[in-house]
Image (tube, rainbow, N blue to C red; front, side, top):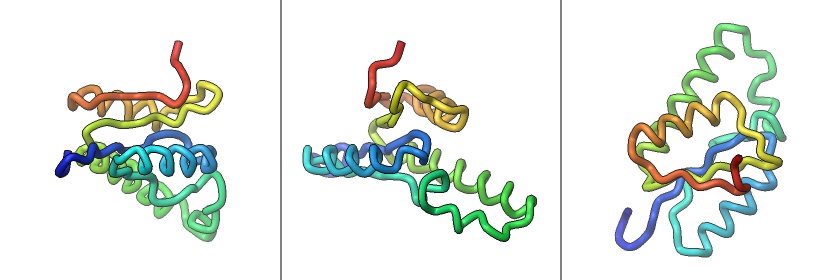
Length: 112
């Protein structure tokens, strides 16, 4: 927490860009510092991946995954954008990391 602001990192599939933007806005207006993804590779930022050879693509994805875990390190909690209950392998890894480091984990939709 910085001053009296809770820091929340958003996690989830980047295919849910609209939900990310909506949650980011809501949590910000509730008085939180919100950290989000740097790009939406599955919904609108596909040019990022164009013309990348396989090695560069792999290294870039690994860097982005690691960078997101560092964003979790900065946070007091994470908020999972699990539209329709969907949680992919990357997001599952982020949830496990957050739990292992003692972060609170909240979800957009109830989990079963």
